Length: 112
Length: 117
Image (cartoon, rainbow over all chains, first blue to last red; front, side, top):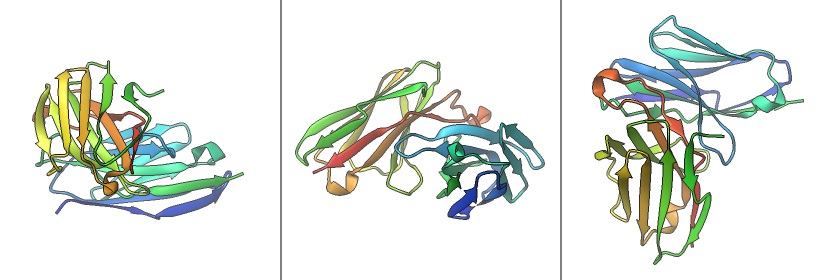
């Protein structure tokens, strides 16, 4: 059964304190893994797509990495404006091309 | 600002009302989606339209009726909803829905916050 698990559920960081968010997945073949950021009352904002193990993507203070079993979202020297819920979603290889399975997210709070 | 526009932003309706949610995108995307999201939960897929045809219905109750009038527009018609249907309803779109060219990211609107009295 396809499954996505994110940890921790919530994370509080001091401004400038780097950390990582984890997304573990079990799918019957991975077509793609996606990271989104969601602010309260808003829709998810697309951040990264990762396709294969060993791949890395960067954007400002965020860096996403992928292995065969999990993905990490590394946040370097976070700022208060990085506070949001970060969602991981996987697109399995052998189900419908449009299906996305979301994890339950990590709520990140960055304290000034 | 998101490139997927949803209206209205907020909607309060009684259980006997009929209303519609609207979604529009001008990115040339050919797949469009409706999701339901409850507080502190991830989005749950409801419907997928691929080239204006309904391709996925995730066993959604018939009180939700989707419609795709053209490649840029997606509607969700609501009738006789229940209090448990109160949620954020998200629309998304992606580029090419064909099975062989998957892993296209979905782009989301900011949703309609629906409250059922």
